Length: 237
Ligand code: SF4
Ligand code: SF4
Image (cartoon, rainbow, N blue to C red; front, side, top):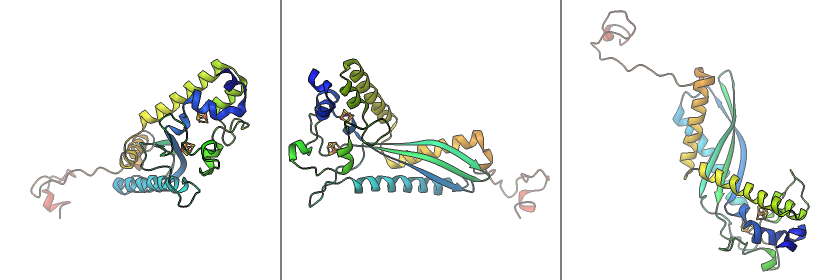
């Protein structure tokens, strides 16, 4: 292992021998996007349907984009194993809610082998038929914040075994946390988002919550307005 840790050029070996393909197992598809809701949460079921539609659209975008470049193309991903849609922040301006969501989908790549290596890695196929993002993974020269940066690869270049182990542990924990917080379907994810926004409104903007109407009294019951008249002769007319 020592020689693996000494050079960044051996990053594929670090991926397989040390890391075990954390970034491909599961592979996290992540998209951030805003949702704007006018008129508060008056119609929760319509809002939930909109959130669900948005989640499904992002999921479709990822599965459409991640295919091999050969002919015919083969998709990398099927149905996600988990859906983790996070409400990053919420803003209320008058009756307009602006919600920023981060949609994360945990995929099992159909090209990930049992030994956690990539079965269509160029070292095996002799050419790169993977979508571009796969080629960026663990770019040895990428700096933090740049495309393809991986802290494990970066630490492997330093040769510091303890730092590599810490980086692997941190990546594992982050992925496991997101998996544990995820749910099994887009519908559940949408419901979680709606519950979070409802809870936020209850604390921060109760005026945006749906108005709870009192149950309608019977026709001969006293009217709810306190007039003393029967409902049918008062507000029930
Ligand atoms: S790029 Fe980084 S996270 Fe991905 S398999 Fe390699 S070492 Fe692991
Ligand atoms: S094709 Fe290979 S590199 Fe890309 S996600 Fe699948 S296993 Fe990972």
